Amino acid sequence: MKLFILIVSFFMFCQSSYAETYDVVLAGKECQKDNLQQLNCSYKAGEDLHIEIAGVGQENAGIRLLTVIRTLTRR
Image 1 (tube, rainbow, N blue to C red):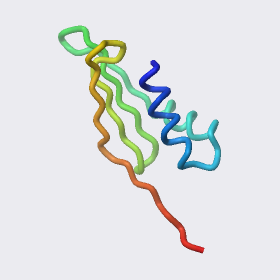
Image 2 (cartoon, rainbow, N blue to C red):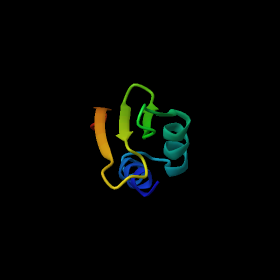
Image 3 (cartoon, helix red, strand yellow):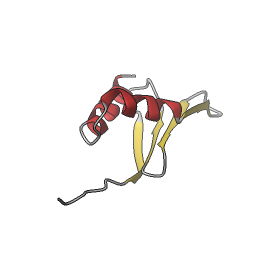
């Protein structure tokens, strides 16, 4: 859970509304156990963010950033 909070906190700085970002990422969460009873979660927020965490709650959890797009607007 600490790992998830760290990831969400990182992406919060790229958004204007912290609560909205957290809610969107959490709404796109899907978790399942594999054949070794290891919990793996996928977090999606639209088409711009897709993160997978393998081994949630374990010491050797892994993180994959599958899609991270940040749109910059010039004034």
